[in-house]
Amino acid sequence: MTKVNSKVLGLIMGVLFIPLSLIGCTGSRESGGGTDIFEIANTEEVIGEKGEEVLTLRKHYMILNPPEDLIDLKDLVEGYVKNHPVESKSKFIRLSFYRESGDLPRDWQPDESYMNTDRLEHHRNDLIASITWSAAQPQKEYDVYNKSKEGKIQKRMRFIEDRLVE
Image 1 (cartoon, rainbow, N blue to C red):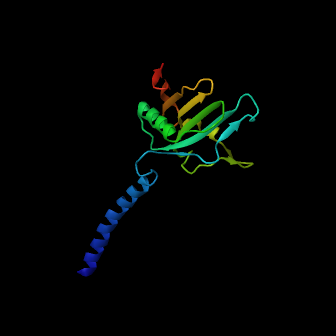
Image 2: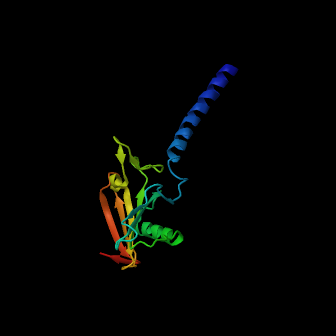
Image 3: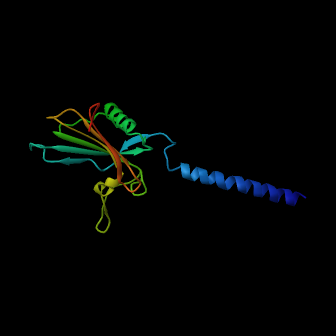
């Protein structure tokens, strides 16, 4: 009788444990469901020499669990830049924000090895927002994108500061 009860108990625990462990696996890819932004290490680019007329700074960020609404996405990146100001003497600044994907995981790093070059320009399908401004034009321009999983632009919105531009 105890053999049967222990087998039934083992079966019940197995039936409950397997789905729960699978749910845990699918949730581990996300950062607890909340949105998080961080700079992608080893990707900052400074183009031009300090003595030159034109000096460009490009920084790249990852957004985990980005909002799907484009106005919310714009507000998110705008708030991030206000809370994490970019200090630079560069004449042009471009900040690019990417979503996490199978091709661009959260721990992605550029690879310049001989047979396996992998740079951020190979991941434009995951670019979902950008901010640009310059010393000559200090108003920030925001581009936000809603893209398919394959990277096809489904909707794009462009803002100059808080004004929507068609």
